[in-house]
Image 1 (cartoon, rainbow, N blue to C red):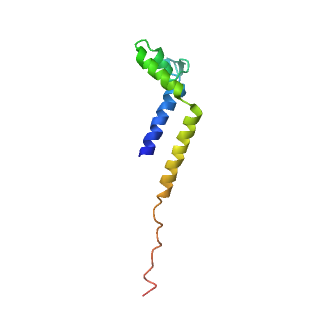
Image 2: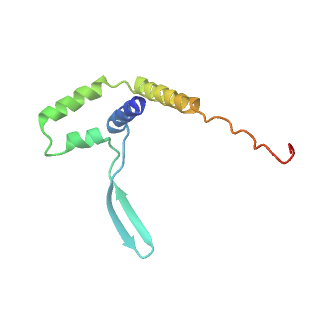
Image 3: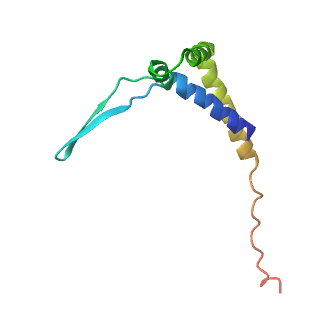
Length: 107
């Protein structure tokens, strides 16, 4: 469970600081055709910084955390933990099923 929690924490950092996303701005229907408008891609970190009601201290903390991130090392760490988790799950295989014994032949 600890490995899974560590993977989730690293994935949270990866998603919030490094993965850009497009948000839907508007959607209009013209008969059967639907037109969608999206904003420019930005990470959740960038969106939070641009938010008007965001205070300076959290912005400074987020920027400091962002500067400490090493994307390559983070990705390798996530992959290594996932491989460890897979190894643990495969190591606990159930016991092989024994074939049924036909007692009619022994009588």
